[in-house]
Length: 372
Image 1 (cartoon, rainbow, N blue to C red):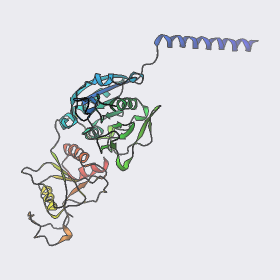
Image 2 (image 1 turned 180 degrees about the vertical axis):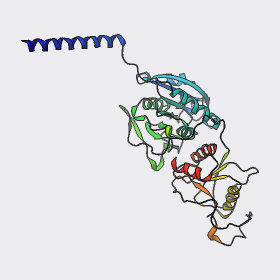
Image 3 (image 1 turned 90 degrees about the horizontal axis):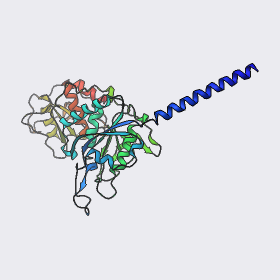
Image 4 (image 1 turned 60 degrees about the vertical axis):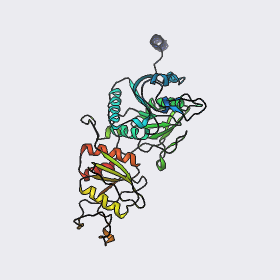
């Protein structure tokens, strides 16, 4: 009887505890969803058609952040969304100075303890550039998602609302933590390092050979891969003391090309190339001797080490003519290009700008391109 009474008392106490907990839970109400900050910059996702009959005629950056959010039914099921109107322009008008301001704004927001993540709405033409800059400069493990649309908000079958819903759901996913800045388009989750726009239609974003990190499914974000290159809190690019970025130009190499000529050489040049013409070799060698850092961006290429300065002798005077050069063996060997394997030229330019803001040392910058 004593054991039965003891068991009865224990069960009674357990019931009392559960009943009390239930009353407190009812009094406290349901747990609110996580908080996500949506920072709007403009673009097609905020676009309005000029002519209802012509979907290609529209004004990008017309709707406000709040209007965009209001167009997504059921968003409040997944997050408590607050908004910041950073800008409202086509993405072609976004500048490096705005990249700096945007990155700082995001870092400030992410320091708020109740913010689970940030979603940036952006025009698709320059989306991959802004996303990669944020990938290198936002020092946080919290998710940052960049999202856009290929059809205007007022057009037929706009893709913006569905993309934004997927972006917010990714931002609140625990699996997105530590993955770096992500691009979410067409329910695909892409790393900002690899994402690129290949055509201006739905499904127009890809990662090339690198593959997507995950997908947005019925139950939320599902990840399969994770980036291994330095990003987020492991990045060394701190914007605290940077007010502007160094001048870096972007060029292409082509058959018959003669290479660039500058009245004042820039701090850096990124050239998209597989090889150089003789005239291009001489032009880039002149730039290197003037102190310009030259980066070769061949997205699927591998790095070939080039020491600078060269061990062997180089002709003292480089002319614009290739005629005096009769030893083909040295042509191209001594152009001190830093290779940017598996980076688009635009992204290689961004990395070089940030690297030059820290140092002008050729070897240190080459190491940065190996890490990022």
